[in-house]
Length: 640
Image (cartoon, rainbow, N blue to C red; front, side):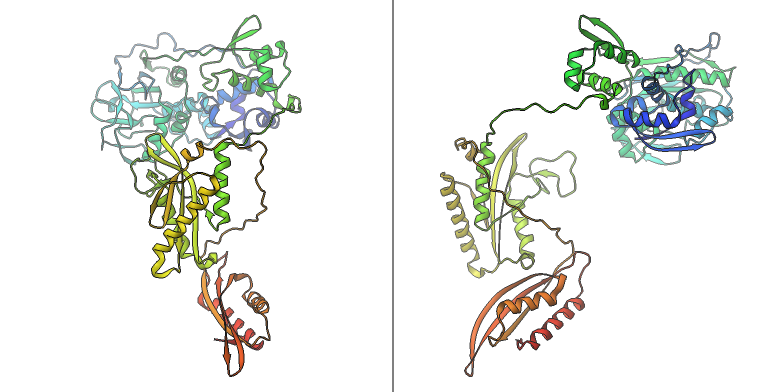
C-alpha cells in the first residue's frame, strides 16, 4: 500500500535536525521501503512510500516512519510521556455502556463521551497537516480522527451522541438484509458476516470500513462518542470487498493492528480536542479488552544471527542495533532476550529478529562468500522417472501431452472460493477434461495438420475429501474413421495399453469410456524398483511459438500435372504465394491417370490461413487463392 508522508510532519517528532529529504529518500530505499515519488510543495516534501504488507501495521503512519528515521539516521525522537487528559476536565453527566458480541472480530473497543463541544473549522496547523498529505478538512472533530489515523496508524470515529438511542454502543454482527446509509449517501445491504457498530435500534457504522450517516457529526453537534477500536484484519478485508468500499481505515485494519494503538489513539484525540475546545467535558473511557495482547520475547545469540544472515556481527554491534531499535532486552550469558514493542506484529521468531537486525545493519554490508562445495550423488525420483517413461512412450507413438483444469462445472466436492462459475468443483477423473480437449482439438484438426487426435494427461484426481490420486488418461479421436470409428478407437486404445504394459513390464488395468482409457498411475508407480543412479533423460531443443488467438480459414486446391514440374516445386509455389498468412499446407491426396496416352498426376492440398494480428476475411484469402491459381497455371498446371 502506498502512503503519503510529509517531511515537515516527520520533523515535528524530533528536537534536532534530521537528514534532508534527498538523504531520507536514500535511507528509505536502502533499508525501509521503496520511494515511488517525491513532491516538493509549499516548503514541504511529500514522500510516496510503498509499504510492504508485513509492515503495514506500523508504517502506515507518520509516527511509525518517524521511528524508522530515528533508527536509520541515529537522531533521537522527542522524549514524551503518554498522552493524558488534563485533570479537572472530566465530569460528564452521561455514562457510556459498551457491549461487544464477538471478541474475535473486535478484540478491543474503547469509547468515551465528550460533551460541551463546538463543531467548527479546524485550526490552521491541523488543516495544513491534513492538506499536505491529500486529506480534505471537514470540521474540527472529523479532522481530529483523521489526524490521529495519519499520525498513529489507528483509525478512529466519532458519533453524534444526540442521534443515538441512549448512550449505548453494541458491537455486533448485522442481521441479514439489514441496511445502512453511509456518510457518502450510499445504501448498503448487510449480511450476518458483517460487523457493525450499533445502538439499541439500528446500525451506526460498518466496523472498520465506513461510518453511517444517521449518527454523523455536523455543525449542530454538541456531544460526541469517540471510538477507537481494533477489528479483525481478515473480516475487515472481506467486509470491504463484500460491500464494495475500501477506505483509508479499512486498508489499515486489513493489515492488522496492535490493540495497544486504540488506547494511544483515544488519548491523543482527547488531548487534541481539549486543546481546540477547552471547555469540553470528557468521561472516563470504557475499555472492552477481553484478551490483552501479550509480549513475545525472542531469545537469540550473536552466532545464531550470523548463521542466519551470513554476517560477522560482534556482540557489541548487535547490542547497539537493538538499542537503536529501542527494543527492550536482557542478557543471559551469550543469549539476548529481546522483547519487540507490541506494535511490531511482524516480529515473532528468531528469523524475524535476524532480518530486522540485518536490515538496520545493512544487507549490503554483509560480505559475499562463495557457497561451500556440496558433494552428493543425484538420485532420480522413482515416480517421476517412470512417469516420464510413460510420457516418452506415448509421444513416440504419436500422442501429445495436454494439461486440463483441475476444476470442473460439476462434481462431488465443491471449492469454497471458485475461480469461475464453471470451475466450482475439483475433478474426480481426467476423462472429463480429456473428452473436452478431444472435441476442441478435433475442430482444429486442419490447423494442426492431423487426421487423428491422440492426446494424454498425467495429473491428480480427487476421489474424496483430502484424498488425491495420480492418474493417467489417454484419448483418441479418429476424425475420418467413418462407421467403424468406435471399434477402431477401442482397438487403438487396447494397442496403446499393450505397448505401455510391455514397456513398463507390468499389466495396466483401467477404465474404457468411449474414446478414452484412464488408469490409476500412483499405485502402479509404487511397484517399480528404484531406477539406476545417473540414468539421463534425452535433451531436446524445441522452439515454441505463440498460438494465434484468431480463427483460421481452410481452403483446398487440386491440380493436374503432366510431370514437367515436381511435387517439391509445386509446394514451393504454394508457400511463396501464401506468404505469412499460410500457416500450414498438407498434401492429402495423390493419384495418376491416363488421358489419351498422356500420364497426368493429381495433387490435392489442404491450405490453412491464419493471422496473429487480426481475423482474416474471405476477400483476403480468396485473393491469395486467385494469385496462387494464376501462378500454377503459368507453370502448366491445370487447377481444378
